[in-house]
Length: 289
Image (cartoon, rainbow, N blue to C red):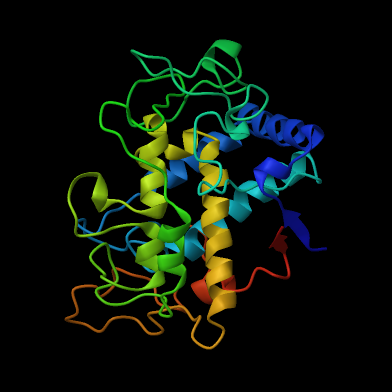
């Protein structure tokens, strides 16, 4: 049965409570931290050697689609009615948005140590201790908008620029690809400072704290952010039905700098052992409201 992922602003109070409770129970059982480990393990930049599948590569979108599905299916084992909502950050674009309410994602971090003190994922409430991190911190941190180095959230115009590109991705298939929907939505640019980051990357930096870096999954808003990225990929596919295919279709050849460094259409993406070609159409599993 096809289920629906809703905009978080449209959730009922019961749906918000069910989602939060399922996430907390998944954390209590230890499964949540396994997903944090997965993301840290596959947080590979295009300056590193070896295969990249999660970031700075064409498989950024299908890899995270599968990652979201793994998370969502785990929550549904706890409560079959739960789905992952999405956060449209072009509309809900301030710390005052309902997303950050005390009964959902909780609020901003406090000054000084940036510790989140409100909501179900506050360390002080006793249910959300950071167990897997790239540092020693045990509590969730946020620094929305980065007041000391201000950054804004993406606008509808930023998103529309990415959606208008009719080509999925282009060589060299990494963070330096000048065109292509994938890199425009992932958000790497040749600019400097905060202008270097757009869309997906810009949102991670706006939330800041633990959302900035390999351990970003420790902040549950990660899933709502990536659900919207997945939603935008779905919209892009619908807008370009004649050309909305994954690239590269075949692996880069020996001698190409990206040889064995990116996943082509029918090559498996670790650790899931699933190919991008199997993740191009989600309509038999879920839809977006």
